[in-house]
Structures are given as structure tokens and as C-alpha cells.
Image 1 (cartoon, rainbow, N blue to C red):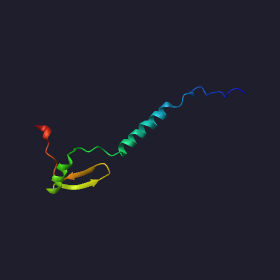
Image 2: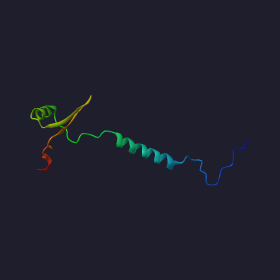
Image 3: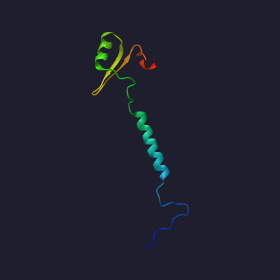
Length: 80
């Protein structure tokens, strides 16, 4: 039995634009949902001294990192 006839504008290749748009959309969604990297990293001993001095406003403890927000921003040492 012969294969069914194709329509003149129908391509045998899958719709690459649909597939690529779906992949790009998936990447965008994953980037929006993934947590960002910390803006500034400090040694744990520095964090402890900030904590003792009362400079820490908020702390989040996770299994691999401690993330916090200071009451005042760190001085910008790269501007000099």
C-alpha cells in the first residue's frame, strides 16, 4: 500500500521552530526559578564578628551555605 500523499506545504522535518521556542522558554523559566548566587562572599570568621557586633539584620541557614543581610552595606573596596 503506498504512503498517503503529503500536502504541498507540509515538511517531513518536525517543526523546528516549535521545538526551539519550547526549549528557549524552558531555559528562561529555569533561570527565573533558580536561586541566584550571593552578591558578596565573606569568610565565616568575618560573619561571626559582624554577628557579634550586631551588624547582621537577617540570616538564612541552608545545608551548604549561610546567607545574610547586613543592616548597612559593606564598604566598596574595589572603588579605590
